[in-house]
Image (spheres, rainbow, N blue to C red):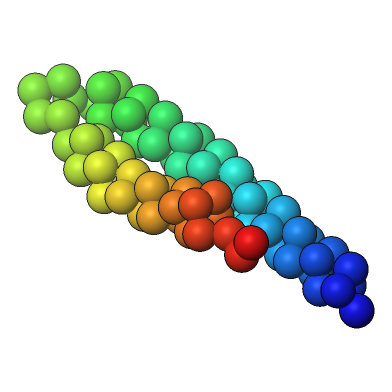
Length: 72
């Protein structure tokens, strides 16, 4: 039974990390698109930094949960 619990915990941790990497990939792609739109339409007002920063806080929180707070 102990091995089954260890396996379940490892599987859960791996799933959390895969979820984080999916979130990070979407973050990078969407923000690259937003930067392109912003720089393509106006270089006077750089607004792309706000969604980059706000979503970045969410990415950081997700990374902490996925990697630092693993069940051990």
